[in-house]
Amino acid sequence: MRVYCHSHRENFSVAMSTPIVCVRGMHSLGDAPNAPGGSDQWEYCCECQSFWLARTAGAASSKCPVCDREPAARYLCDACRTLTIHSGSGSSVREFFISAQGTPQPHCPGCSRTQIGTVVTHTCSAYGASFTSVRTNCPFCRTQIAKPAKQNPSPVPHLATAPGSPPFRTSSQSRFGLKHAVALSVALLLLIPLVILFVIVAWQYGGSNTNTRATTNTTNVPTGMVYVPGGVFIMGDDAGDEYEGPAHSSSVKPFFIDIHEVSRAKYADFVRATRHTPPAGWSSANFPAGTGNLPVTGVNWYDAQAYAEWAGKRLPTEHEWEFAARGTDGRRYTWGDAWRSRAANAGDNSAGHLVEVGLYPEGKSPFGVLDMIGNALEWTGSDLRPYPGAKIANFPSGSRKIMRGGSWVKGDPPDWTTTFRGFALPAGGSDYSLVGFRCAKDAPASSGIVEKGK
Image 1 (cartoon, rainbow, N blue to C red):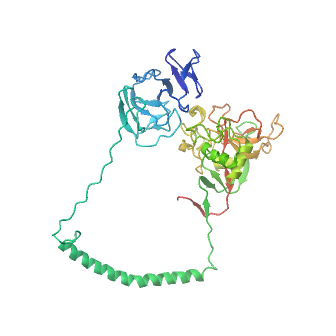
Image 2 (cartoon, rainbow, N blue to C red):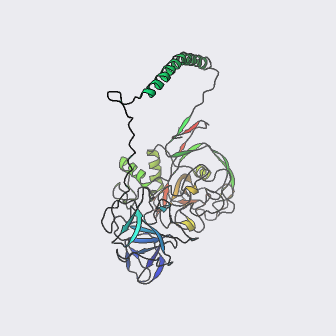
Image 3 (cartoon, one colour):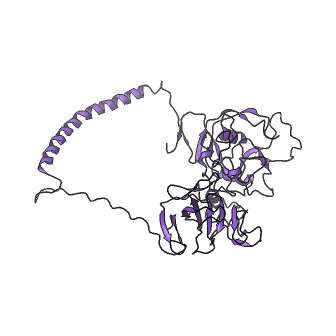
């Protein structure tokens, strides 16, 4: 993250961790924007992508101290105390913006949460500025943020009736309704025998052909997964490093794969159910507050395998992972061959930290799988082996497991392509803080696949 220090009038890069320390004076600027229970008020500029700490609650910035742009709109996050500021001037480096609904897109830059809800404009006398938010109460002036009143439906006018007559009748309507009611009754009486005859004929026809007609079996796609039909594809990249090549033909059978990386919330269910050892930084089976939709990381290969077995699934092979990521057209990224801004939490588009799963729909794979590029590295079920014909100097000895997809950390070489092969010890390594996973499952080779909800 980029942070501005008022004392030294300098903008610098630091990790999103508490406390935020000025690199010039080595003094604390406060808690990080995403710190649980953090009380510091940060402002963030969409244009220069910089955070700065508000000096006082009663002195809202009239301009961004870094790029000197005038704010046109402000949004106060409902989860953290980050005030996102958006100017009216365009910028080629804009990473976040405030949507037409008044919320930061693609998510809050402070806590990485997707903002959902009806925003209301609030003029805060204590902060000295107006902003939109879905909050119920203002944290500065401590007053309730007024919500728009619900519109009551217009009352249905009552028909004028004569004393003692039924309230739904008028003389002309009564005669009109009676004629049509009689006609409708006669029509129904004539149609009922025809419907019964049709059902009997259809039943007899279906029964007489049960031995000659093929039965089509359908398979439901498990919730949260997509069906990948399998096929032949070119695996690897001759232009990559010695582990990525040579490119060669490979094939996979049909399978299901998770749309998203396994989240902390889902992994917590597994920890509670099995009493499995939680990742470092958790309190028993409880992840840090407000981070349930982040991908779980800090898990070794055996942890990921244990979760997959508990969930009735397995880890994908690296062949399945690459096929699900690039399909049959040999694309370099899940969306194509050219790097696309805002399609992944990686490279020059990295948020500088993990973000919630599913925030980059533009980066979906040909089969609709999300976040296969960047965010968290992903364990596969495969051992590290050279590709056929590969010549690798100093090939590591001992067991290594393949990881795919890269992480949010800017890598060199770019480990966030569909063909890059990372690898690590399955357990006992020095650091698994960047590594997560998703699950897969065998699927039948049937064309009758039915996706739930469709």
